[in-house]
Length: 284
Image 1: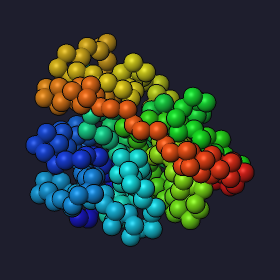
Image 2: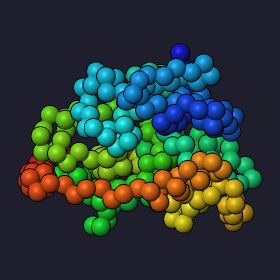
Image 3: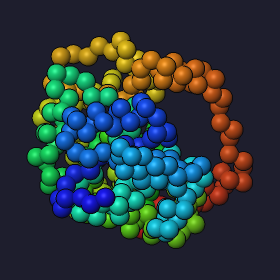
């Protein structure tokens, strides 16, 4: 599929290509005016779709690029979808990545994309883009002697192609060091730390004047019920996580049934602590 030079692509990150996913992709195309591709979690096999381009996020595809892939890479490393899309659409200048539990609410949802279409000089846009809090789970994975750790939320992000290329090069470099592999950062820690410590134009979604989200409606945790959500009047508000109908009920049931994760064995904890000490005194 050819792309127009300088165009903007939307990447919809999904674990299934269902009627609901396709409907969401269609709606995003309608309100944004941008082509939508599906970044599909293909760890159990590639998928195809007639209505939208599919970027299969598989072990084979990522390994072919030289990326280190921990067992949970498809969940942990959303930035890998950007690297695959950059090669699929080399003429595109900007890429949005959205998750399927993101909602755009208000009188004019398309205003969000029209507004940011005028901010083409910005390399990286995300919610909750800030220095990493000491209590943040991923903070220790974003340490290096030449960087300060940063964090963001990844359900709605936009990257320029030069930012994608820089992040990709840093992921490849990290993959060559065992200490980095043992503390492999997630997408939020890695992209925010890499770009905020380099010569890029980085902004929070709310840095431009309009308030597109609040901490009460854009977070990680139990989903909001899209069938009864109430928001203050606004042209557009970005909400995460939000689900409706059967999807909401299924998610709430899964959260109630989920058991706590087993703690790391002592030997792995020791390895991770050693890796942390090495990373702190090493270049990012």
